[in-house]
Image (cartoon, rainbow over all chains, first blue to last red; front, side):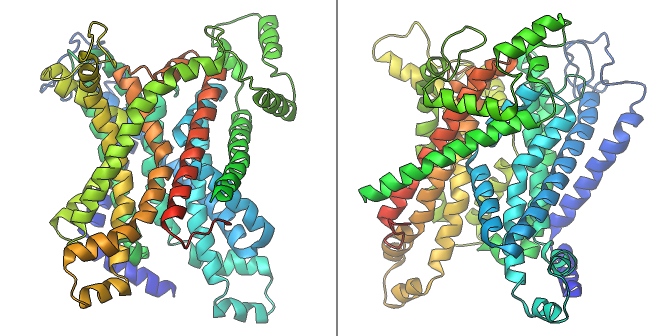
Length: 281
Length: 320
C-alpha cells in the first residue's frame, strides 16, 4: 500500500512541472533563509548609509529607506522570519490536527462530538481578528505568534485526518489486527496513523502559506517584535512614503507573494497527487 | 419555516458564547502579561502595576474573570475604552455603518461576478478561461490584501492621480455630488475587497457547477434534446446555487477581515481603522468588543445563508 502511494507520488512529481517548480523555488527560499544573512555580513539589516530614500540602482538593487538602509538586505533578513514562523506554525498545527483528528475519528462518540464542535467553532471564527486580539493582549514575540497561528490552524488538518481515520478503521486489515489481539491504541498509532497521514500533508503545506500571510498581517498592524526583521513591518514603514519611494512598498510585498505562492503551488500540486478527485472536480 | 429560523437562532447563541469563551481563554492561555503589554516597557512603580491589575480585575483567577466578563455581557456592559473612556459599543457602532458600506456591496458584487465567471469557465473545464480562473484563485490566495491596497494607491492615486488616496468623503462636496464623491472614494478599496470576495466564492461556485453538470439528470436533459442554454439555466444553475449561497454566507467573515485591512490602508473611517488604532494603543476592551461584534456578524450571516439554502433546497429539512 505504501509502495503504491509513493510510486503514485513519484509519477505525479515527474508529470507535474508546477510541483517541480514549486519545490525548486522553496529550496531557493530555504537557502536564502539559512545562508542569506551570513552572506551579507558586512551590511546588517540596520546598516545605515548616506543615500536616503535612493531609488533602485546598481548600488542598492531594491533602493534604500528613510535611514539609508538597503531594502534588499532587509528583505533577505525577513526570509528567515517568514520561513521560521510558517514552518513552525504549520508543523505544530499539523501535529495537533493529526492527533486530535485521529482520536476523534477512531474513538467516535462523545470525544468525536466534542472535537467536531471545537473545529466547527474555529471555522467560523474570524482568524485574523482573534490572532491580533491575543497578541495585543499577551505581548509580541515570535514564539507567541507561532503558537497562536498553530492554535487557529490545526482544525483544517484535524478534519482531513478524522475523515481519513474513519474510513480506515473499518478496513479489513484493521479487523485482522483486532483478531490478532492487538491493543486498540497500538492499532491506531502504529498501523492506521502512518497510512492516514499522506492526505494531510497538502493541507499542512497550504497552512505554511497561510501562516506566512498571517504573520505579515500581524506585523503590518505592529503586532510583532520590532527587533525581528519582518516583511509586514517593512510594508508599514513604507506606508509613509507612497509619494517618494514606491520601492519600499513594492519589493517587500513581492517577497511575500512569491513565498506564499510557492507553498500554495506545492500544496495544490500535492493535493492533486494525493486526492486526485478534489482538484479538478 | 418560522420554527426553523427560531431554532437556528437559539442554537446560534451557544456558538457565539463558545467563540467568546475560546477567545477569552486564548488571551489568558498565551504566556504573557496583559499589564506588561498595557503599561509598556517604560519602568513604572510596581504599586502602579498592581493598581492597574486590580482595576481591570486581572488579579482574579481565570474562571472568575470569565464569569465576570459573561455577566457584564448579559447586562449589556461591554466595558469602556481605555483611550477615551467612552462605552465600547458606542465607539464601535459609530463606525459599523462605514464598514458595512464597504463590505456589503463588495460581497454582493463579488458574488455576482463569481457566478458569472464560473458559469463561463465550466463550459469547457480545463479550457483557457477555466485555467485562468483557477490560476487567479491560487494567485489571489497568496497575496496580502493590504499590500494590494498600497500598490493600488501608489499606481492609481499617487502616480496616475485618478482616485483619492485616503478617506471616504471629501468634506467640501455637497448635494448630489456627495454620492458621486462617495463612489469615487469607494472605487479603489471597494474593487479590492470585491475581488477577494469574488475569488473565495468563485472557487466553490466552479466546483459546484462542475459537479452538478456531471450528474445523470443533466445527461438526460441533454439527451432529450434541450439546448445548452436551457440545460444550464434550468438544470445546472439552480442546483449549483445551493452551495454558492452557503459560501456567500460563510465567507462573510473573510470579507470583513479583508475590509478591516483595506480600511487600515485607505484610512476608511470604519471598524478596521478603529481596530488598527486600538491595537496601537492596546485598547483592550475595544479590541474585545470588535471581536465580539465580528463573531456575531459571522454567525448571523451563516444563519442567513442557511435559511436561504433551506428555502431553495427542499432536501434540507427544517428540523435539522
